[in-house]
Each structure stands twice: as structure tokens, then as C-alpha cells.
Image (cartoon, rainbow, N blue to C red; front, side):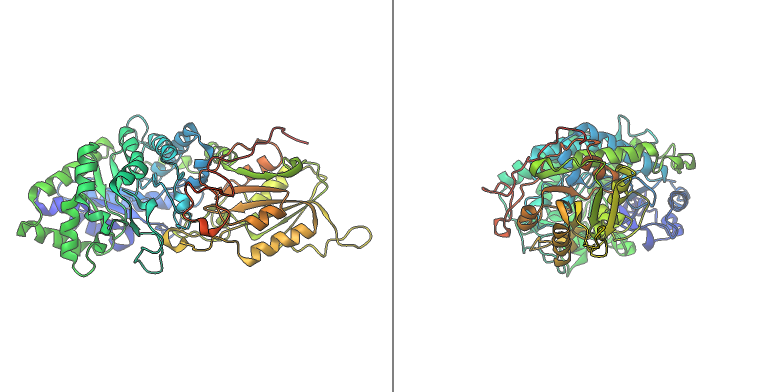
Length: 575
């Protein structure tokens, strides 16, 4: 291989920043779709055509080395319309069920490979310690052991028993290491407060809290690991040669390749790109997610090797790691997508699995007088809150678009639709997104009082540092929905849609029953299954739930509103 061909293999480009012809000309080794990086028509068929076009271009290069094509399929194949969207990791953490996680990883791999993609930037094995972080929902738990067990199980589901199986994908545990331990106010990225910040802890704590999930992932077969935007005691992780090379590749025996996060190499020295590239590659980065100006990276690294600032041995080590994984994936034997697998996207079996995941993920925080389960024969039910009838809100960030989006963004079943399908034909279910039901009257023209009010409230979609939040309180409009339903209902059930615990003291006091539903994904019927006794509540809190914002960061605090592992259970199937 020439130096140009080697450096091409080390280059990961965002798909909108390169056309297939330039993949051929520059021997590019990998292309990705970032959050929302779909083809112009977002369908499984269009994904196959797009990915196949890039792969065919790679095969036209002198050596014909196939591409790795990567995507963030972090809760199902979440960029693709019609895919099964599972609960986000915080909900899966509440299940405490590694067998379920492996099944979800397997289903996700099948759907991802059906669209021609062989590389998934998941699972996140972060251990969030401050729930103000906008990526809290990407973490299974604040508990290191639970993260280790669930992350390894999910990885095994993605990769199966043999990476060369055409329906397995290369997993990517992320983000190495300590991204969940950053200090509030330490980020210097835009308006972010904690995302991409500084993890200000000693090495013993780093090793005890944040490193074990990576050791478990390596033991489970990890061949690709993504490095974190964050810093450790002032030094960017992408510059941490000790952690990347001595600890990860040496001490832990990681034999795969390290990939940078999105343009993260540039952050090492924002005023000197050459220094940033040299530092990152020498620290142990094997592939750079450029993601845009790949020509600058290629020329810079070429110049660094020619000057002797990066050794040929370091380049050869990186390329050897990358090519070894490509061979293990069977890409040289089967580089092109197989359109025969398209029927595997959004199958009934996968949707049923997603619904079961919802059932196991919800946590019952309050249930006075056995309010839940509700009777399917309840005469009148009021349902309020925009989130009750919105696939986008209940799915959260990283759904079709990077930040997610409210609205009918992909097929699925809303919570309201699940409720309507669960009750008897004689039950009257009324919905109003702001919880206002004055126009509904009884026989005497008085405002009707519902037997049960169900308020579905919570956070709007967000991802990464955009979701950093200092307050963690419900918006006034959400609180107003609760108040209106309280006034118009005999009993009130609150369902909280959120990517983390929020400060809920007053709503909790107001409710007869309170459910933490997290971000359940497209199968909202799973929520109704629990409300009406088709399944029993069993989920347990994966995070400590604070009673006051002054308790944050909340991991391990005394006198929380609810401790880690709390969760009521229902015992009867129906009333």
C-alpha cells in the first residue's frame, strides 16, 4: 500500500461531504451518516441504493478495499423511517435484563445490515453521574456494574457469534473514557454546560467508575471503540496517549481500532490543526471522523509522516487494525448490500420486541390505593398532554433527525392510540393536548368529571449538549395540563416522558399514580399494556432521583426522592 492508500483507510467522511467518485480517487476507508444523514427519500430502499453507491466506488480504487459505512443506530435503526425504534438506553437500564438487551442488539443488527450498513456507533457505555447532562438518556445507568453487564449484552447482540455473518454489525462502545463524569460548567463548546466538558477526578475514580464497561466490552468482542469529546483533568481525551495506548490497547489488550468522534481531533489545539492531527494519531487514534474537510486531514497527516512527526510504524499499526476488522466482517467477500434483506426492516417481530422492551422499562413511582392497573371498563377517561399523541416526543432525540423532532416523524403507535386500543368498546376516551375538557358535560350540562385522567407530560426531544439543562423542571404548559386534569378527574395518572429524572415533587404529590416512562420509542402501546394490566410493572430506577436541584450531581446522594433501584410493582392483571 502507498502512503496515500494507508491514510485514506484512516479517513472517515460524512456522506454529504464526499461524492462516490472522490471515494475512489482518494482511497477513502469509511463513510458515515450522522444523525439525520438519510438519503433524500428516507426509505430502506433508498438507504441501500445510497450505501451501495459508495461501496461500489470504493471497489473501483486500485486495491478495491471495501468501505466501512457507519451510522448511529442507538435505539434501533433510528435514522430510517419505518424501522423499529426501541426505548433509549435509560429505559433499557430500568429493565435490568441483559437477555432483552441482547435480543434488541440482534434485531437492530438485522435492520441495520438490511440497509447495507456494517458499522454501528453503539452501544454507549457511559456512566452518567450528573443528570443535567443532555446525554443522560444514552447511559444505561449511573451504576458501573449495570452498565458493564447491559453494554456487553447489547454488543454481543449486535455482533453475534461471528462478525462475518452477513446480518451482524461492528459495534462501537463509546465514548472512551469518563464522558459521563464531566463537571457542570466545564464545557467550552458553544452553549453547552457539561457535554464535552472536563472530567475532574483522580485516576483511581476514573478506573473504578468509568473504565470497567470498556473492559467488559472488550471481553465481549469489541473491535471498534469511539473516543470521547471530553477531557480528563484538562487534557482532551483524543490527546491522552496514556489512556488510549498504554491503558486501552496495552493493559486491556484492545486489538481493534480507535475512531474519533465528530471533528473532535480539531479540538485538541483549535489554533493549530497540524498539531491536533499529530497529537491525536500519536496518542492512538486510528481513524479520524473528519467529518467534512477530508482533503485537509489527508494532506496534513501526509505532511506529518513525511516530516517524521508521525512514524510510518504508527500509520501501519492503525491501518493493520482497520483492515483486520474489515476482513473479520467479511467485507471482502460480501461488500455490497443485499436488497433481499429489506423485508427485515420494521418487522412485526421487531415491533413486538420493542413493545416488550417498553413494558419492562417503565418504572412505577407512586400507586396510591392501587390506582393501577386501570379497569378496561372505565366509563370515561380524559387524556391530556401533547406527548400523549406524538411519536416524535415519545421517541426523543436521535430519531430520524439528530435532535429528534415532535410530530408524526416515523410510523408507530402513540400512547393515546395504545390506550384507545386497550379499553372496552363502552369506554369513552377523550383527548385534548392541553388538558382542557370544559366542553364535555354530563346529562345536566355540568362539566364532566372523568373517572380517570391521564396526563402525559415531559421533555421535548433533544440530543447531546443541546439538552444540557440546569433546572430539570417541567415547563409551565406541562404543569397546566396536570392541574386541569386534576380538576376534571376523580383519579389522576401522570406519565412522564423524559430522558432523565426531573424535579417532580409537586406533580408527584398531585397524582394518584406516577409513571416514569423515559423515552419509549415507537411502540407506545407498551405503556397502555401496563396501565391496563396486560403486563405488570417491574422496572427499577437506573438513576438516583433527586428531590431538589441543589442535590445535583445526584449519583449516590443521601435522602433522594427515590433511590437507585426503586420501583413499585403491580400484582394483579386487571380490575
